[in-house]
Image (cartoon, rainbow, N blue to C red; front, side, top):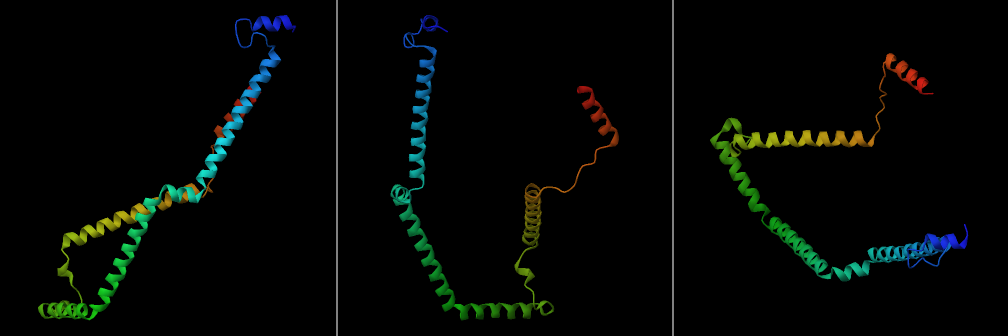
Length: 173
């Protein structure tokens, strides 16, 4: 291609009017290369920022202080409750023994159980919820195993379909 024909193809474009095809391709490649380098620099900056712990601590300082204070309050309440239970253990044991004696006096044939404390509906509801939870957990476990472990069974193809497929492949060839 001569220089005159190259400039004629670009006559209607003001920027590329005096450029040949090769120069235009080189300029486009340089522009794309510069854009790629800028994109890579931006990605590197974002990666650095995403893995910078100090940056994230400074950005979320209020949240971290609030979570830390809530954790301290929860630990304090747990320790206080444990101390309270330890100090009132004897009183709680005496109360439970008194209730057991009252149950034994009222129903000597049912000394070991306290079935009257829980209504029948509550017990049935609890058992239904447990059955549902067990079946749900079983289904989730089964699906997890089926997706994680490949199946060992090989599906059998009937002999008439195998010959039909091979005949169709031979016809295409």
